[in-house]
Amino acid sequence: MRLYIFGIFSLIIFCLSTSIKADIVFTSNRDGSRNIYVMNDDGSRVRQLTDSPLYDSLPSWSPDGSQIAFMRDLHSAGAGKGQQFDIFIMDADGSNLRNVTQHPTDDGNVAWSPDGGFLVFSSSRNGYTDIYTLELATGVLTQLTDNSKEDGLSDAPNWSPDGRQIAYEHVVPGQGRHVYIMDADGSNARPLLKGHQPHFNGVNLVSRGFPRWSPDGQQLLYFVDELRWGGRDGAVMFRAANRLIIVDKNGRQPKVLKIPQKWHISKGRWAEDGKQVLFAGADHGIMDLAPRPNYDVYRYHLASGKITNLTNSPNSKDSSADWTRGSFSVSPKGKLATQWARIKVGK
Image (cartoon, rainbow, N blue to C red; front, top):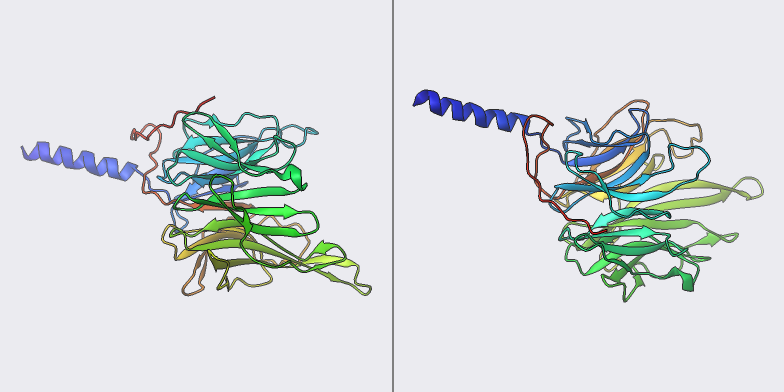
């Protein structure tokens, strides 16, 4: 009897030891091409999920943490073909990879609906960059914005946690890049922040984009790019700063994250607890134009302002990190068979 109990206990320990928890998904070129990786929230246990010569980017966890959606450039391995991005989904361990858009134009910047039943993404399939939703069970595609009316651009959508609204970046010629919010059916589109952005010599000096809802739906995190004109005759334009800013859902009470101004940073995303954010950056200086490969994933603690380097991978570019809101395990292949819920993708 004791031997039987010991055997059962050993089996449980084995299963637990071979089930590896993953919290953060990101992209990296550390293997020579741009692939998808996962790691624990402290930067440990980095594992590669995709192994392709093609360019994979902007991974996004499903709400339950069982799947990852991302965009792949199908022409990135061939010379002179330009770009052609499609949206792919895979299980959390990198298995069951499938293309869910299959269109000859660009589809990308994908995010999930709160219930996991829809994807929201940008596409140029109508000749303009607009926001679409895809119902995964049926394959039904719905266009939410229509930039043919003003020759604009809508991109980088993100669904609110209650499913009622979608935040996105919107560009109107001559008016710059703004953060917008619309209802989930595409109606009632309006800018998050009021007023025109500063511009000089016909160039907008502040661009705001890549908005992301906080887990409680009360705040939005977005990215700001600031440009300036300089030189003796004022004819030289240069990037002055990147910033990450948090505002409430009505566009009030802005908070600028205390990231050194000289850093070159990119898009940010929330942690599942709403107390931290992830961003990718390089600390060699925003004004340094010399090519440098190092670009790491950092964690920013909102209460303390503490910045922690999670990847610290020399001579590589790590970026596009996303923190799962689900609780799950990634099992090594051939060790422990974990059953994930399957989504039937309509064609």
